Length: 274
Ligand SMILES: Cc1ncc(COP(=O)(O)O)c(C=O)c1O
Image (cartoon, rainbow, N blue to C red):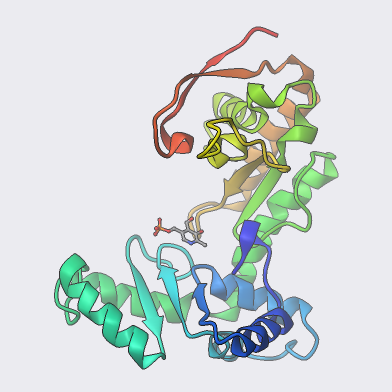
């Protein structure tokens, strides 16, 4: 569900279920941002205008055999995650694995207090008023950037605004890592942390060892829930708009340290001259 904060429609989930039934395939969602997704279904999909979010979520989940869930997002908690399923075979098989990896299923790897917080957060994060505030704060940042013609992925997603680095920094070649460059420039200018989602994240072809340059080279500005005010959105937008106005003066980067795994977390870079 939910690539780049763009929702999947109920229609799509229904069709996927039908397709998988035909081929006897199971469906396990990554339901991490399913409440924000449900909000978009209510906002955009005909017939759901007045449906409570929890009902939308129940219908979404009814088309799956289960889900994995990182609770740090729509559950509004600091830590935790879970796998849920209504398939008895998956349940039995995975319950045994919990003992090996986490502890007995009755206590798992998480403290009881943290599990209680997840249970409450799941309900609270599915409240319509909360989701309206959440999605609209992200949209506000997207609107401020669009007003200044900064290239972003449209429409604005539910948890993040994605900047299009190839359009933002067209003077850089792909091997000068435009998205990484833009992310570093934003941090230098404003101390706002973002995330490269482009060639650095994509890594190398496992057979040829060559860098893979995907079609999109993006910078993700993910907004933590219930942390920032709209003034923070304005501060962030101001910095990015200022950078956009002087974009031709931003030099590219050279990768000077590349770890074997997860280079998007650990690599190091040096600034090139213009
Ligand atoms: C949709 C989705 N699934 C999974 C994860 C990973 O979560 P965790 O860090 O809890 O493994 C993320 C994190 O950004 C996410 O957005």
